Image 1 (cartoon, rainbow, N blue to C red):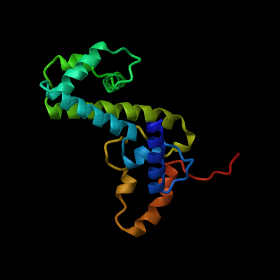
Image 2 (image 1 turned 30 degrees about the horizontal axis):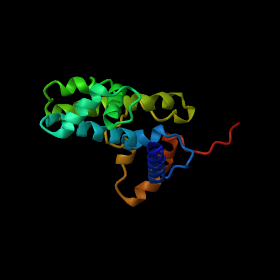
Image 3 (image 1 turned 180 degrees about the vertical axis):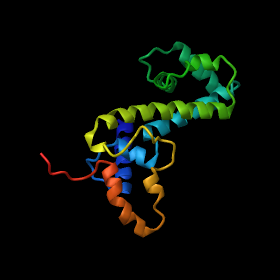
Image 4 (image 1 turned 135 degrees about the vertical axis):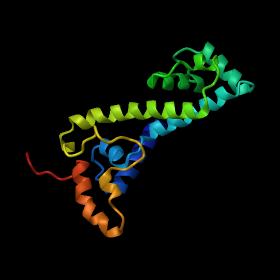
Length: 181
């Protein structure tokens, strides 16, 4: 429920930034701006927090997390069980397995989790974008969610450029009125 509300708000903000209608497709919002969905950002934060716990085995939090992971089942509502679900979503090793092994270097963990989360969400967003006939001008196979905006947006340098680029962005994003039947 909370994630759905955040996602709806995130879509609203991205749509307003691009001046898209409230009914515009979702995939172009992310591909034009090069941004990850809010869910992915939250998951990256959770994975970073897991690494911090993993890195500090002398703490009570580490002990509690390890105990809960050993004792909980798939219906558990604990944070540790939620971490396990996130690991399964991104096809990462089981968190209990990782807690029983030496921690990865921070940069390696950060890079690996960023890659798996980004590639998962790119694949998830590319499927509906490929099926949407309104997005025929946006080639989602060549752009990603790397944090860099689409080249058409990087062309904008002054306020007057926005007026020039706006029709192009609306066509790429499939946000145009079509009276054809």
